[in-house]
Structures are given as C-alpha cells and as structure tokens.
Length: 150
Image 1 (cartoon, rainbow, N blue to C red):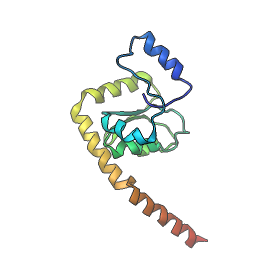
Image 2: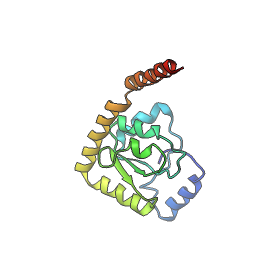
Image 3: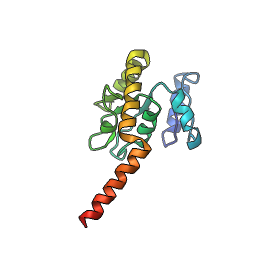
C-alpha cells in the first residue's frame, strides 16, 4: 500500500493483529521518480477514497497509462466514476462497503481474462482521452474559446 495518512498506525496494527506482514506492506510515500515502476509491477490499482474531495483522481489516469485496471468506489459528485468506466477500464463499487470492495479485488485478482480486458480498456481510454499531447491541445482550445467569449 503506497501513500501516507492518518490511518497508517491503525493499518500497521491491523497487519500485525492478523499476521499479514508477509502479504501486506505499507510503503509510505512513493517518490514520483519511482511511480512508473510500481504501476508496471501492479496487477490492480485500488483507490478506496469515499469523499468528493477526490474530485478527479489523477492517480487513476496514471494507473491507466500503464494498463493497470482500477477499482474505485462510486463517489457521487466526483469525476472518479467518469474516469473509471465500469467493466471497461476497471470496476466501480456502488456502495462504500469494504467487504464488497474486497470481493471485487479478489474477483479481479483471480480472473485473468477480465484483468486483461480491463488492461486493454485502460490503455485505449488513456490514449483516447488523457495523453499529454491531447490534454495540452484540449486545454489550449478551452483558453482560445474563453478569449473569444470576452
């Protein structure tokens, strides 16, 4: 698990409590220069955010760029379920239910054909919507449009 936060100690305690030290590692903050390596090694990317403050989830696009299928909660009012297309690039879990999330993680971990389908879908969606060159072009078009309105 990459990242830091106020739940780190609680997660460490759970890992020890359930004797999961050989299965779960808390990596802490992953340096930006190493992110590519982690995405290339990952089979699944899970973003368990439940708050609208996760407005878009740029990290989801990073995962997509490496063909890493995503699993997310359907955060109403955020861009997360727009970025992750259910059964195309990843799996969107409708309820904020950790047991249901775990079922989806296990499903994706055990179903290689689904994982491959979502990997290809992720790369296709990334190339169609989120490539750097395309994003720059679209942003420039918006700026041009706004300058014409004034």
